[in-house]
Length: 398
Image (cartoon, rainbow, N blue to C red; front, side):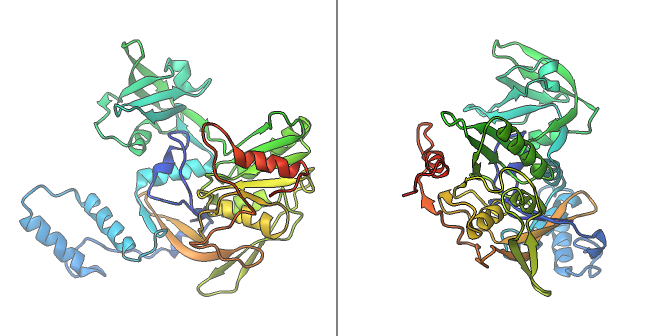
């Protein structure tokens, strides 16, 4: 079992899992499988803990005019209903395909062909291969329309998650896809799946500012702290002495990764507190990460989609006086979910903890207010980044 905070979804196929059943995302921690108690939803009448479900199943089987779905589909429907009755938007049942994509994405890699996927105005799914990916090597061209996978035509109304499930698979296995090129000709290609990396950190020097480095974190995966360390080292080599951390549209991810990231900017000390129903409060502290960034000028960009694990980092840097927040009020997700892997590959996310910033600020449904409110730009402008550059350059914020 892992621990998650909220996750706001961005992208397709590269981070395609983010069209899952989470409006705001999640944070992860590990747990033992033997915590789980078996639950009979559909079985012999009276044998389960919920006999009404057995009665309903029997009545449907005997009287429903149409064809019933298979038992697994009915069981999943009952599981969704049971969990929804709890009334917590972050306590959810996740079916196997979505859970597999979620797990791969938080691991920072998956077995696939290396394409980004987007939907055209006509409803067709358009491919863009990553450079040097198996798809590009096999002949997939930017703008190709996906027609079929393993000779099965793409169904009208197919979702991004459904296509992801078809295209991804074990590393070393083959998948056949048929595409339509922009020229109008079709091509059927056999592609061997490989390990596709999903970077969570991107970075660059800010244009016109040779001493300011910009680091953007899209989510908190297992690999994020290491990726961040490499990014900061490269920026420092390029001359960066001041930094902007971009957490906009970061919906969260793995709790421990968020704490690890905070360690690059804080010289030890509290990152967050965690409370549970029965048990003492737990304190998370920043690990010691020696580096030039610890004392460097820093600003953090946030918006309404900055959630959970991203709010953990933003809240710690704000409350510890390390950096101002520039942008808009964050999402406001102050709980942690335990994620239990179930026997059939599905999973159960259970809200089990609340977390608080170093000053014991509660964020649920409130979020973190920005130190300097800045509205999003239009037409390619980025006033939030401009304000951050102004701050780290030594000019006062308005």
